[in-house]
Amino acid sequence: MTADLVVDVLGLRVLIEPGDALDAAEHERLRAAWSGAISADAATTPDLTVSFNAEASFDQGMEQLTVDVTLAALEALRGRALMFHAAGVADAEGRVVAFVGPSGRGKTTLSRALGRRFGYVSDETIAADEGRSVHPYRKPLSVVRKDLPKEQVSPVDAGLLPVPAVPLRLDGLVLIDRDPELDAPQLSTVPLAEALPELVTQMSYLRDHPAPLQSIARLCDAVGGVRMLRYPDAETVPAIMPEILGAEPAASEWHPLALPAASGPYGVAQARDAIRSDDYLIVMVESELKVLDGIAPVIWQAAADGADLDGIIAAVVDAHGEPPTGAARQIVEDAVDELVVAGVLSRD
Image (tube, rainbow, N blue to C red; front, top):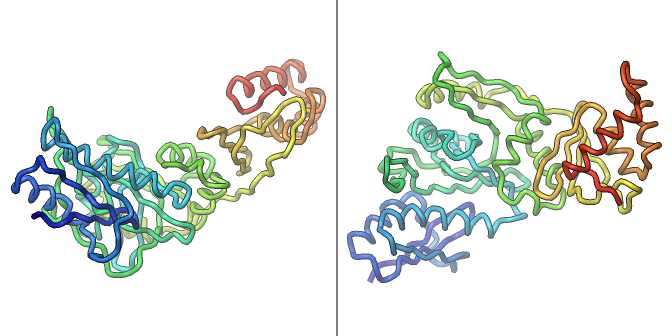
């Protein structure tokens, strides 16, 4: 009889049920691939159960299992943690840097390069609670193979280091972009209004938080702002880690905007959250992020305050003055129409 395979996933204990179709060798391959995440807690009842499906082939089942475990954990944590599609490593003090990027951006390759020098946390998802605590997801590394399912390689077999025996805490958010034309890695600070569109598209269930934009903005502040890392090759990144970990805080100034209980002729009720940062108004409409600039922030705020079209025009002229060319009314009407089409405003 094969022992239960229970793995630690983002602070949850997940039971993997292999079913009856696997032979002894396949059972061992499954356990070996997930060896970096096997739970040391043998007593607590698992939080989730995920079944292994090998109907097509064992390798396809292994690739799909990684997806299924990830999705089940993300669903269970919705609204409870801020979850990034990111690779992550931790230093000896437990400081975690999350390297955020979409599929195909090189997170697994980056995990292999960094994980030989720092504790491997995940190559898939980094989740942080309000206190920035991070729980590892030491899943197999999903390595691309030409015309074959991704190979699931255990962290041990990949030569990656264990996480330090200290509490893990998110210390850095880094957007990544691999550019083979570069001579060396380049690290820069990204203003909040520029960073949020990139971050939000790489987050799971952000809209399930009561104030989603304020939650992510506070986290960005707490880690000292968001950085962009452009690098030619993953092997060049470990050398810049001291700069990433030692970067001076560069948080952006921002403040929340109250959402009206009732609106005037132009509604903003579909907005889930809104903040102002520098000259930008950032609003979340359902699960989409909209960054407004120019006269659009004034239009949105006037609409939120219940103004009609004449009131919106007056607010724009008061904030920006008369336009150097064209009529203010026509310019504002056109801008209002664009915001309605974009779903930022509605005509009530």
